[in-house]
Figure 1 (cartoon, helix red, strand yellow):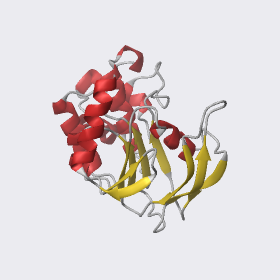
Figure 2 (cartoon, one colour):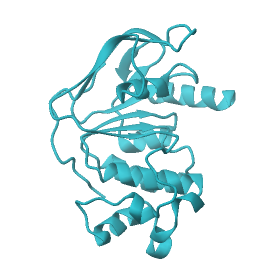
Figure 3 (cartoon, one colour):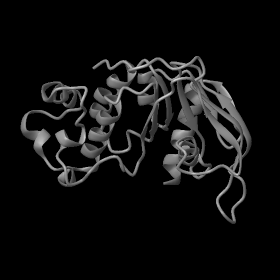
Length: 224
């Protein structure tokens, strides 16, 4: 499955400038955090549980307001967001109704859903009867076919077995827009081709390092 963004963004689709944030009564999660994305980059956010990885995605999505600093979107930037809460799904609608998109025919939508492991009459199931993993697949399909030029993913593989993860990963490996992701899943991260990492709470940007991702994977798994 190869879905190109509808529009190409500017050279820098997203910039975080001097960001400071904390929840009421808590200490700062980040202070004066700055970084920028390059168009087409696949970017990973890592760190121990509780350092504010998902919070940073919510700030980028304007679901939370920074104490200081700003998030700046570049020219023609468009964005789709996968949250662990799967809030983009309507539980009372079918799988097919949830991914409905005026740019595609029903046949095309069913083909896309096939790439996310839904076939035949599966597409007429109500979302409320699906397992967490099935719901995640519906949400990821819906996000990809929006054809935005920025996709933000928060722990997208939490409910996937290795074989499912591999199939879903292929769809995002082919995505040519800019991808920002929180994940500690080494095989998924490597499959889609992450190039740089933001390490929290330090706020350091480094080239992708497999050993560092494995370190956080084992650290966070042990903490659960």
